[in-house]
Image 1 (cartoon, rainbow, N blue to C red):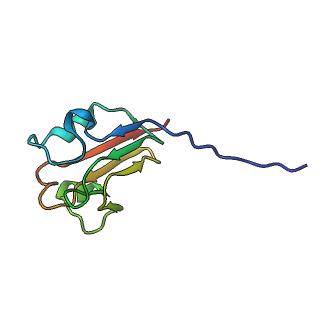
Image 2: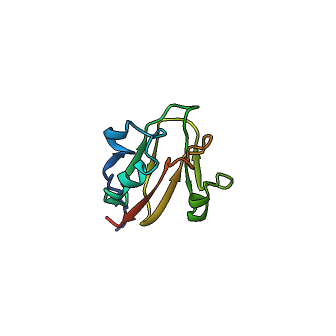
Image 3: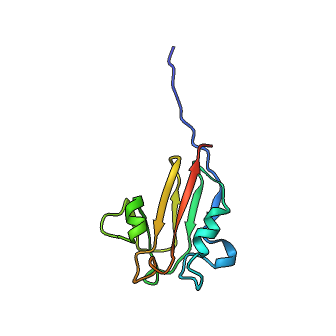
Length: 118
């Protein structure tokens, strides 16, 4: 008798970062736009963040909390300079995302995804 164990990952919901109202991942006139958007979401593990942006105009990095507050791009957890791109939220907790182009992070192109278990 042979026993096999399988782990099945169920894909979660796909979120267009910023939703249709913000038109994707790009600098907004309101520096609170992405923070307000993310506060309205209920992210779960296996959900996917879809960052819709044009390569060269924007980028996305997942960073540690300290780097998020300082808009520090020196040591990202993950950096994606080419768009569009997707990040799967694999672990519960707070995930910090910033744009690394020019002064976009300082001008509000950043948000925290607070993720709960599925």
